[in-house]
Image (tube, rainbow, N blue to C red; front, side):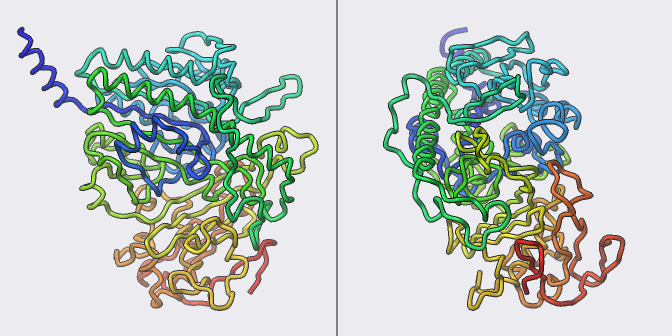
Length: 592
């Protein structure tokens, strides 16, 4: 074969094969205080060459449930992986629920892809259980193992299901970078075969420590590579309207937090600096992998997707470093995509979530809608301008969480004197709504207290409007707060246990006629009595996992009169009328 024919054959193979996917998934990075602007390779080689999604959210602000959500395309309440360790989460729960036999890596293999994985896969994936059974779905893998996952200089890893290897004294992100580059070399050997490589560093997660004699685990500030130690010495956490300020009309444990001292603030700034430093090795890895793809001629046929599992807070609302909350710091996360057809330097304003990741990857792989797994709750994220223009716009993201909130750092759980290291009764269901006319966050905690933030007027979530919903002259989207809360209550009532179409089109479940597609439509005065009579979202108790028996009414009224739904053993007309929604104060009582 002459050189011309060889080049022609390679070109035809490149055109014919499915695109590759390089997925880089950090840990706890977030968007608002995530340090994205300090990552020059990510900015120049991915963001400026692709699209940034400004309204992307995680569905649960905790790593293991969030990763299960991404890998399955199902809401956390449908994966039943809702915590980081048994009985409600971690690798044993992943195996128990059957996800290890039926999730995205396996689906990608069936679509013809070679699959590779480097880094953190699951919590509670340990030296003792990594082979009970082996994690499925990967042609080659090198997994970080607990309890060493978050120890930046003491990683333990299992390569291709072999006996774990110790990497004491080596910086973990650099170890992962070498392994990712090696897997990429292997993937590029056969240009006719598409591949998916996931690289999941532990940065910028807190550095983990463990005392076996006491059975305790705690998290301190992240650790950087030695070459990055002198960077960002003057960086501070942004002093926005929420920093070191209690939420006005706050509820639950957040209403009682003491003001941060100057010493604590100085430490939080240092904690922030360490997070930025830890991300620099990740950014170097991004540059290294992109350069390798370019050198091998595969860059133009590869989707590079960058995200994180959940966000993070640092001093906002007086909170010590941590996650687990439904506030914007914890649920607003980066999504950056570069790849075939993705417009360069684009800013995508579609509302998307981690539930959409799996169907997006499958769509990139060429899997037709009819061949998608039948139990997906998400939908494909538009990656081209044409797709974005034709996208059936969604304005909602369902958010949920089970369990306590952990305060990290030396003034959090690590401190024996701290009264604020662990906050119980932090289970909640919530919804985030984003449109041109309104931007809202509404939540119901397991103690049956409620939060409503008008983020058009209050982007830093400083005032809870649910505590006093009848305040004079206050409106959202030109309507009174009680009326808006009635609609949001019904929306969560659908979303909190939704599956499939109900997760994607919740308003259609309430209005099967299809004439209500968003909150603006639902605020039509003709629906006032219908929404006033919806059952209230509530909890019977605060659990650390998804127990549907503890999560209040599971059925909702459907508009139309002829149709009825069963409510706690009683039957009610779907168009029944009644009094306005009965809101509750922070003690669970009636404040009307």
